[in-house]
Image 1 (cartoon, rainbow over the protein chains, first blue to last red):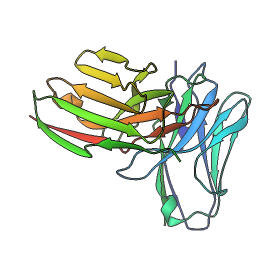
Image 2 (cartoon, each protein chain N blue to C red; image 1 turned 180 degrees about the vertical axis):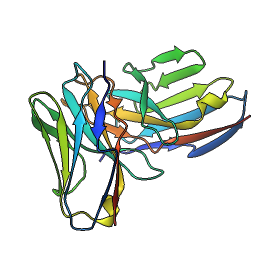
Image 3 (cartoon, rainbow over the protein chains, first blue to last red; image 1 turned 60 degrees about the horizontal axis):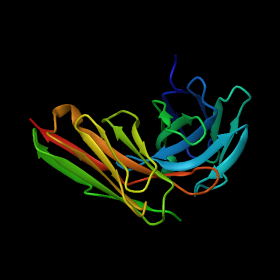
Length: 111
Length: 112
């Protein structure tokens, strides 16, 4: 049984560009949450998807958007990248409100 | 918005010593989750507490949820080098769709 997978593992982008990160949840999970983790800090909640709808959102600008597909996989899109967007982006899947299983993350560097 | 703080921020202990990290939320929580993140890794779920005053044990780890459901603690007895990492608490809010707010984390270093 595969756990949570994310792609790509590393990414380097230039300021102003757009990026799409992908996540496949653990088998049987229906909820996907995205987090941003800056170096030395705790994960910051971006948003959560359930039944293909965004049902919770953290304090992130509209440049951050997402999508969940019928197979429960999810994408995180970030437009107009800023240097401050450089971070580890974590995807976590869960079944309703139960424990979250995190993927290995995507390390995004904005130059 | 909800804030979750943890103390201490860093802790260095000699192998075999005990370790405790404390977690405090600005609002009442529906549940508290604990995660461990090894250097270069991702958070790994340890446990979830739901009931007021709940205490759970996992081998050398003891987790408590406060009576007011606003604070929690994780205690490790007789630390080992494998305990090295950052421990995060994460509070679930009381809303219909649970939003989880991670704490600031406690980084544990165990000196052999």
